[in-house]
Length: 59
Image 1: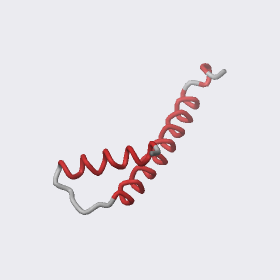
Image 2: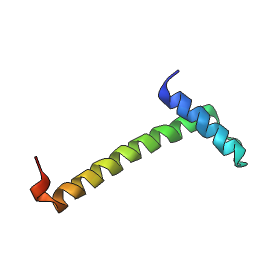
Image 3: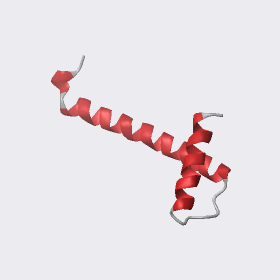
């Protein structure tokens, strides 16, 4: 079982616990993939912003 499948199963369970029904395992996997991609983009953006803000800290 992949990490995405595990995260999707957890997401599906959490959504169900909060009354959000009707999403399939595949829907949850798609959401997890999107979240991973967006997290990576945000991390790259923050890292780039930090490097521009503190040029003396570059190695």
